[in-house]
Length: 318
Length: 265
Image (cartoon, rainbow over the protein chains, first blue to last red):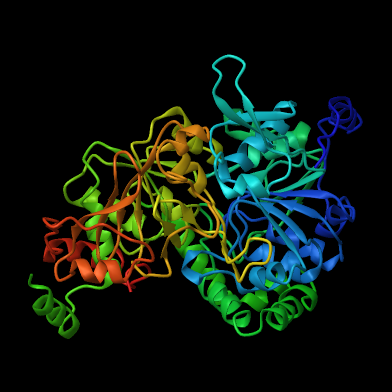
């Protein structure tokens, strides 16, 4: 693992067009901003605010060998492995979700060493993005010491604190080439408001060399300016804006829809007996065959969508 | 001992499931006014149960970035990162911020489940078998390593020989490492294993050696039962306490919380 030089990091930022300009494009155009072999950070956490539509577009575009990082990885990690988009995922936890048990696809790929699951502690992931966001090469922390997790990671170093003499762990900065983040709303310039849990997304946006936002809805810049305190990701970090309703389906988007539970059950069922064949069948049916995103949602089903939406909006009930 | 009679009554007409027993027994360990960092599943259920019984002032933290929620009955979250976790919370922060509360020292109890534990309370949720060539790749640490490194821990898990081993295949979340003061020497001066709650009893750790020991047995469980289900020599004192059985009131609250038995089947 190598940490990019500070001047190189600054050069990449300086060369971006950071002006207040319209960045709206299609999923396919945004997918073209990601190159084979790039490091890619994925926003959200587990089955929440996953930028599923962008992942869907990257899989359809046949991107290869991305080095993926995320706070916690769920079904999208299985699909990244199975499609070949990534064979190296850096995260703290990887399975569909506790209620569905250990992911059979993750197991099939990692136990046969066809893919790598590089495990860091959850806080280490957060502080690695934060170091990246701060423009420093590492952050000190007090966990992971004494564990097997530390033994298997590349790049973390224990040190004696120059002030107190205590043992601290230094975790290296993550500055992903591209971050993909899904939000409830943003303007055409990329000023994003996020409702509910923000996970590691704000640090991730600051750390990345390029940010692609997908959004449930594009709102006007005037609307953003009425509540600038609600802007969580600033336009100057953003390179692309794609409007995708239900862009996290079948995962949840806070306040709008909860996870599509029956579809998540269907996924678990399809991948339980033969994880390889099951994942390919799922990819064919929901990723490669649909004509467009609306067709994808249609295949998941209107009844599921309405149910997820009804449950999702309930969070604001008294 | 009344072991034989109790075991028969349990096997004939179980009044509660093993998971319900776990949730009730671990809820009782939480004290009113504490701040508890809870994992999903039994810990989440037990923390809410404590909140609804003896500890109304319990503050629950979830690693998704949630501070002090009241999770709704019948709407348990499938992980600690979905919106259901944030119901009626006092504050929502980023994942990194909520984990940093552990490091800063704001958390009284870390509370999670475990796949495999050893004599010194080290937890494994990463690999069964050799990490280089595992028999099973498990989901990994999540916040487990951070919580176990930085807080006093309560672990709730099923008591089986294959789960209670002499030495874990892999230390995902450190307990007392090799016992004695090896935890502090590794750079972890704070926190450590406090209690392990199982469906057979309640375990603690000896003051000096830091080896696991039995503090109490659940009704109907004998010293021989718990030893037979443990993969290392587990001392049971002669005058070991017996825990009071779950009450109908506690079970009723659990069943209202989890009517579909998502976590208590």
